[in-house]
Length: 185
Image 1: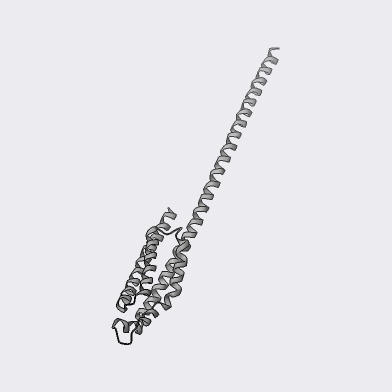
Image 2: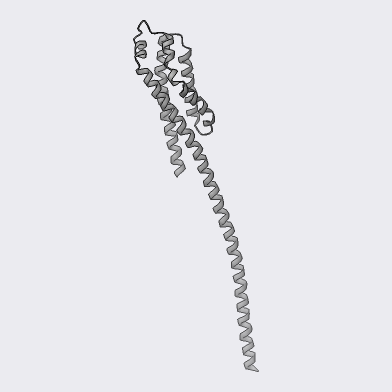
């Protein structure tokens, strides 16, 4: 009977070992499942955050690009007008120059002025206070050009307007570049 007792003892030990291993395996399997759930949850949150960040950048990029295009187009149109024969007459204050002539200087720029005003509202979501303030100053300068009754004042405001456009372009470009760098970090 001692051989049977040894056999039963070994059998029970092996059975106990297998049961302990199964319990350990079940516990480890449960831990792996919990770990997987947490890991997948983190992956989903990171993906959502990345997607939201990308959508935010897409909006910023849209307004930065649109504003820069309109500012550039406005500067080009104004530059062409400033180079025109009529404006050179105004600078030299020839006798046939009039306020009506100077009013025509902004005529080719009206669409760009309108587009800038339209874009500025929604762009407030993404542009800095500095750029917003500069755009407001630009619109004020345009208003000054249109309201001035003195020919010399109007010409002076147009020349300042051109410098203001360049200043806004430079600041907005710098801001967009900084936003792009932050996005890629």
